[in-house]
Image (cartoon, rainbow, N blue to C red; front, top):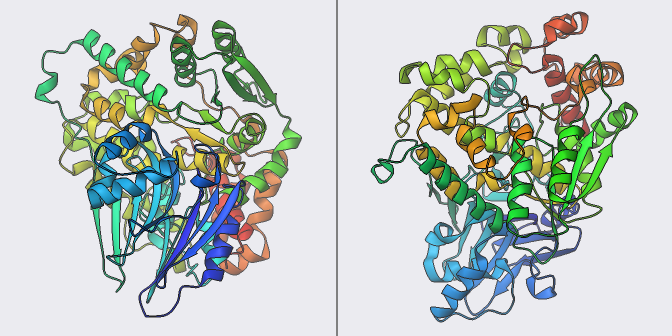
Length: 594
C-alpha cells in the first residue's frame, strides 16, 4: 500500500521531476515508510511506501528491472503473488525480492498487457515498458485502489489522490457541471471517469490504459461479470448456493491475510464484519485484534453498536478495543477529514472512519473490513422491492429510491453558470441499467451499485480515510471470484430474509443468531447525520465564506431555504442536502480551489 504518481511528456520536453516530487510529498501519509523518484527521458515516476510485504529495501519503489526493461510504481496488494511467483519461476524467471511489486513486473514481462488477468488483489499500477516506450496504467477490478489523471496538451500526470495532482500544479480546477449534477443527485457520488473538477479524471475500475510516447492511448475493460444465470449453475438449490458462497468467502478472507505484518479487523458489530471475524477464527487465527468506534447518543438515536461488537469479540476471544469519542472531537475531525478526502464525500460516517483509522493505525498496519457486502448481496432496503419490478422499470425504481434531487430541483440549487443543460444523471442511469448483461431489474441495479457506485462511495471513503493514517484496509466481500459468483446467483437467494439471505445462511454456520437477525445498523454518528450544533456552524461558515460568495456555486435563496428549515434539508433518499452543499464548499476551500 502506497501513494504513486508520475508524469509523461509527449512533446519532446523533459518531465517536471519537481512536480512529481511535490505530488509524492502530498501522499506521504499514505506511504510514511519510504520514498523514491525515477526518470527515463519522457516519463518520471514517484512513490511513497507503506511497508506491508517484503519490509526490506529490496521491495522499494519505483522498482526497476534493467534486464527486463521495465519500471513500476504500484499501490495495493496482490494476494496471489506467492503462487504467481512460483508459476513465473517455472517459466524461467528469477526474482531479487520477496515482494508482490516484483511479481507484477515479471508478470508483465511474461504476459504483456494481459498481466492484469493474472492478478488477484487491489491495485493501481503505473508501469513503464522502456523498450516499447509505453506507459501502462491499470486499476483493479472493483476500483478499490484509486488512480487520478490530469491531461493537458503534450502531458499526462497520474496520482493516487486528486490533491496530489493539485500539488503538482497547472491543473484545470473549474467545476465540471455534469459531475456536479451527479454529486447533487447521487448521495455525493461522482462515478468514474469524472471528478467534480474539469481537469481531473479517474481511470475506471477494471481498466488498462496504454499510453504511447507520442501521446496516443487506448483503453480496455478487462473484467465485467455477467449478471445472468449460467448453465454451469443449473440445478443448484439454496443449500448449494450457500455452500458455494461460503467457500468463496472463506477463500477471500484467507487471501487477505497475506502480509509480513499482523492483520486486524474493523468490527462494527454488524453481520458483515462479524462474519469476517468468525471466519478468521474458524481458520485458526489467534490473538486477532478487533476495533470498534462509538459516539454520543443524540435525540434517542444510539451513537454506538458496542453491544454487538462486544458480543462477537467475546464469542471469538479477540483482543478487542472500544474507541469512544465525544461530540467535541468531531468538529476538528471534520476539518482534518475534509483535508484527507481525495474527493468530496457526503456520507456522514466518513468522519467516523477517519477517527477510527487514526486509532487503529496505532496498533496494526493492515485490517480487514466488511465494505461491499450490501452492494454485492442485495442488503439495502431498496433492493427487495426490485424483485417485483420488470426489467425495463429498473431506472424508475432506482431513481425513486436513491436520487436526492431530480433535475427540476437542481435548477433551483445551482447557479446558471454551473448548471448542466440536461438531466445528465438520469441519462447515465438509464444507459447503465439498460446495458446488456443483466437478466432482471435487480441484477441491473446490483451491477450499477457494485461496479459504478461502490468504487466512488464506500470504497473510496475507506481508502481515503484509512490511508490518511498509513492503514491498509482489505475488503473480502469485494474479492473478484466472490463478486462474480454473487452476480450469477439467482436474485431470490440474495433478497431472502430481508436482504443478503444467502450470506446470512453462511453466517448461521459460525455466528450467534442474535448478530444475524438483529435490525440492520449503520455507522452511527448522530451529530453529523442531523447536522446540528457546532457541525451546523461549520457548514454555515463554509457556505457564507467570501470564497463561497465569490465562486457563486449555489443559488443563495436555496441555501437560505435549507438553513431556515432543517427538515427540508433531509432528502427522501436519506442524505442531508445542507451537508452536501456545505461539504463541497468546505472541500473546495480546504484545497484552495478557486
